[in-house]
Length: 145
Image 1 (cartoon, rainbow, N blue to C red):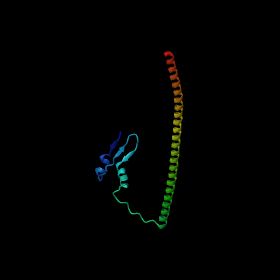
Image 2: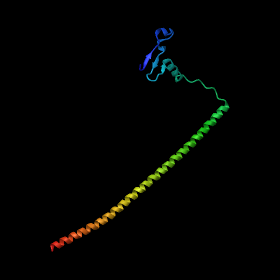
Image 3: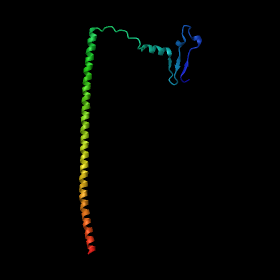
Image 4: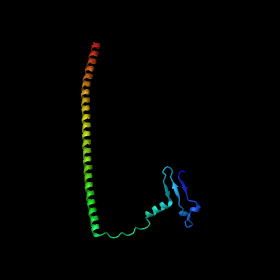
């Protein structure tokens, strides 16, 4: 059954066990695995933060020097990697700025081209309107005579 909890029968229990220590088997449906409360307690006790860790023995001088040298080498490697990626970031940023400026220049050029076309069209339209106005004035004057 889904999420069933079972405990051994009373006859299987040892008299020295307290009810808290009764072995409980939890079966999760579909996984087919059994977890015991005792195993969970044992695992929890491994990661108990309330007790301070035991003191470590001192390292031999040659090991301490090797560890120190390795840490220094790793520190240098990290700083080289950081400088490399800062350079890459700077290059990407500069390329982006250049592309943005290029796109702005292209847009401004396109707008100026359209504005020039509009000015030419307006000039032609003004010539046509002036010619039509002159024709209208001539036509009115010919009817009035």
